[in-house]
Length: 349
Image 1 (cartoon, rainbow, N blue to C red):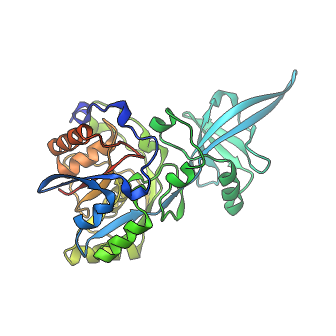
Image 2: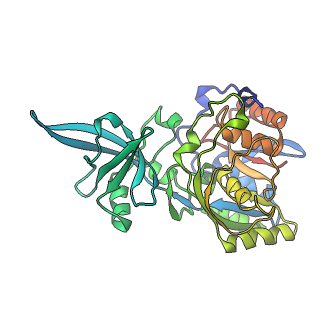
């Protein structure tokens, strides 16, 4: 299975840099046994049945991009350097793993000042990352970070424009609850309160799980034989209540439909050992590519993904490589908007 098997041509102008407004007005491409259907996300209830269950990721994106100043005393006096930081994940010892640019200008033991309230000390560097210990913790840290941090937009958006205040709303789901992600579960960004109410009226159930999406989701696949790719790990939890709800839907003959690849990867991880969904918590590095056996997911709502990405491999595993080529060719031809702020698809094998 070659990396080139998951490539396609995408015109640059189809990469969305802002989301649709309102959220549910984004377009929706439905692929099912009857073919391909063009619509909008607000049409989603008509494509679902009473008794179906959507699985939603309630992770909350933190404003993980920080700009600060490192101050160092030298023979010439106080020397300052601008330091850009992207937080990656909290470590077990209370520090944060972070990308630092330029890393060469920050030595172990030096401080970076981000505001009058927030600063961090470098406690070590390795493999292009630094361990940063902040002067604040808990709610105080969250409040200071909200003041000075920017949303960590994906590289393909950040290359076109910087993050701004609007992104603090746009790049967060309406049900975001548990802070820890540095990338959004983007298929969920299409949901607003009117759509949630319409789904409930249709008899569609909802279950919330947590998977903290990491920056590794944007890492390119660098091996030609994709089966040898090593996935990044992300922390997730399926509670006992969530597992019971999903199991009940399966037992009643309803469909379990994760919204986003993050929710799908998590519930498939939780079912990997026994073949049935159960409570689960920990780091998952599950890699889903063609040949994978899905134990829980009956369909998937997801955005349109990058060429040669692990997410292209995941959707190919769900509906088949030839089918995905047809879906993506249609999406390009019909000018769907791609990637994190783009349009959505509902993939029913």
